[in-house]
Image 1: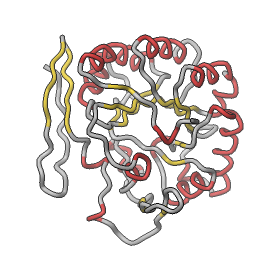
Image 2: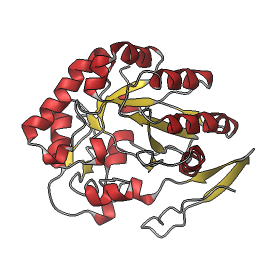
Image 3: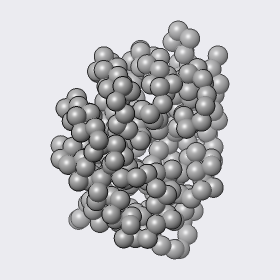
Image 4: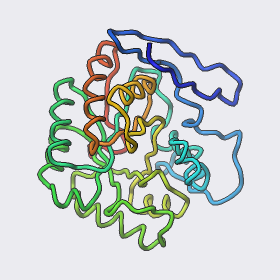
Length: 277
């Protein structure tokens, strides 16, 4: 039996529904995404806010100065209130997962992951670091050619909240130049560290900040089985799962889960805001 990670109850008091789907040796935990990942209009506070959305439509307000600091990152779930609805709109009840990979591209790892995703007709989103993209332009083209989405993950992977607004803008611009037409309209702040200044600079460049609802904590040393269990526990409709294609154990864990996701009826799709078409 796989470990189950409890989701915090929604503020409405309604219980989160969780059902176990057992397939072979893998248990997939299905149900609502953790309340941390959902917008929380009932707990709004005054302070710096950034309105996002398409002109002429309702513009959701994201409180970027809440939930995106070191304390939240220590919990592994940065969640500025409103970020999910700004990026995705209405939450889907369908069995859709948004698998995301940060910090690549890495020769010998990213290309192997691409072949693996092809085998299961799975699409993902890659948040690429600019200096690595510049040194591996062929891999960037492969990612795009195979139908995956590409997002901006800054050029040198700094803590953006420690930088001046000008340096934040420069990190994003340099990466946009390195990625060229392969880049979609999104970014992810390294370490999940974001505030209203970072968000404004990203949005000024047409880049929607994308956080995550679940992670497999693969920046630490764990076994493949441990990472696989985290992927199983993260499996919920509309989940945005963070992994790293720099970590070979993560790729092996994804390899174990892909057939289980397929058997459970899940589709793996690219984040819509990150697509170029």
